[in-house]
Image (cartoon, rainbow, N blue to C red; front, side):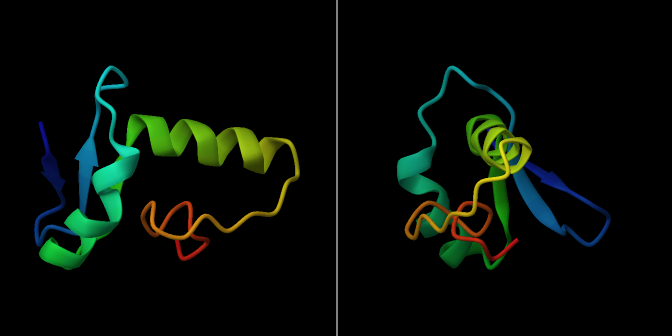
Length: 68
């Protein structure tokens, strides 16, 4: 399931944590030209942020590559 969010479609959202999403986020972003967030990616991003960690994980979407 992919939900496109915003009147002019500003981003895509994959809300289910039961879906393995990391492997397709970057490809989907390139194909749609939009940032794509998944519940899994946002959870990892927020945990790293709360821990004060700095990171760049290329290939797993804009959020985890530090481009969000």
